Image 1 (cartoon, helix red, strand yellow):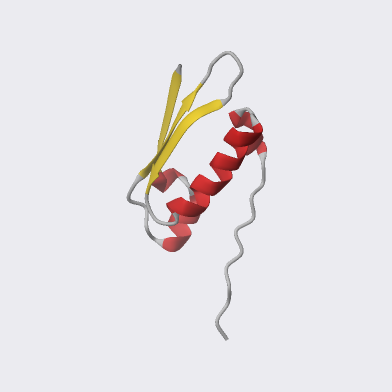
Image 2 (cartoon, rainbow, N blue to C red):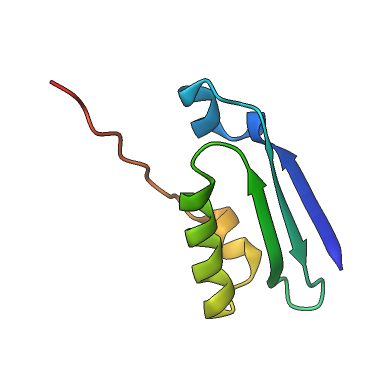
Amino acid sequence: MHVAKIPLAAVLRSRTLEETQGFLKALINPGNNRILGFTMIGPEAGEVMAVVQTAMLAGFPFTVLRDAILAHLQWLKV
């Protein structure tokens, strides 16, 4: 098993929110690159968890998420 861990500060969205405390951590099966487990500590973790859970349930390798462009719309207050 491979463990991948990155600080939240490496995620561009966390910098736009100016909330960079935390991390993302995934357990990867090296045979098929599927995500076996995932955790995130930080703001908006629930949104990220939902995307990763969907990938896990679909049996996608982590590369599907790595290579995807995921838009995060910010609602503007007028």
